[in-house]
Image 1 (cartoon, rainbow, N blue to C red):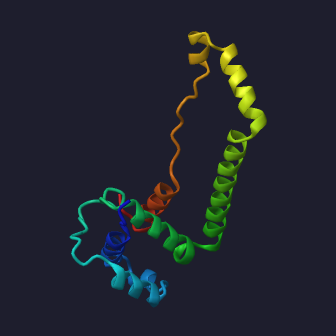
Image 2 (cartoon, rainbow, N blue to C red):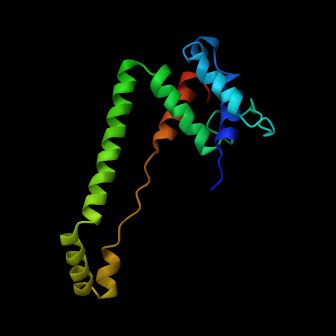
Image 3 (cartoon, helix red, strand yellow):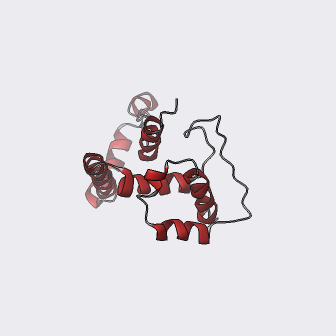
Amino acid sequence: MEDNYPKAYKEVIEVLNYVPKESIDKLPQTMIDTFKAKMDNDYDFKIDINKSFEEQNLLEETKAIFANIFRDYWATAYQKERIEAKEKYDRQKIEDEKREQYNSDNIFKKKQTIKENSNIENYSEKLPIEVKKENFYQKILKFFKKFFHIS
């Protein structure tokens, strides 16, 4: 697995060059210094000022770093509360799904249900429908877009 964090740190520093100074002042200087010290200086990344924040070709790690920066330093108390509640809900949902998936009682029920529904027509009707939801970092990116008045 490739370690993309040095590249992500480079992207974060480049993006922070376009962030208002009062927002940067809210970040601890040690964090910025760490990003600068650990960034990949050989990685060539430039911001295209003609593109919006969402259209920039950023690494997932960069988006995650900005999500954490926003939550910890830039969000209002209400936004922090909402973000933390959403993260708690998501963690709980994942734990519930794991508990249900690996519950030994349910494993035997699932096998029995599949045998009963061996008819292909009945089985295909019970397949799940894909529901696309907006990821957490996409919501954060939308907020940045509104925050910086980028269309």
